[in-house]
Length: 81
Image: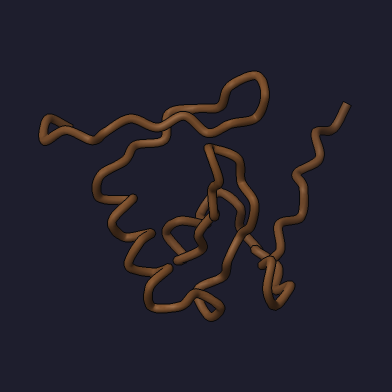
């Protein structure tokens, strides 16, 4: 059986994410509400505030997995990485 990878599109402009494994490196961001992904934004559609928030989250939070109900689980990054 072949596993299908879902097509991910920007929630604002509908641009397609071509390489899902490189989303964060390419500047794409997921918008989370209580751990649930509510939107995915391409770099062109992000406001400066959203970009700054994502950079802050990337510097301070490590996402380690998902719960059985689909919520992202994160923990604070430490200097010992």
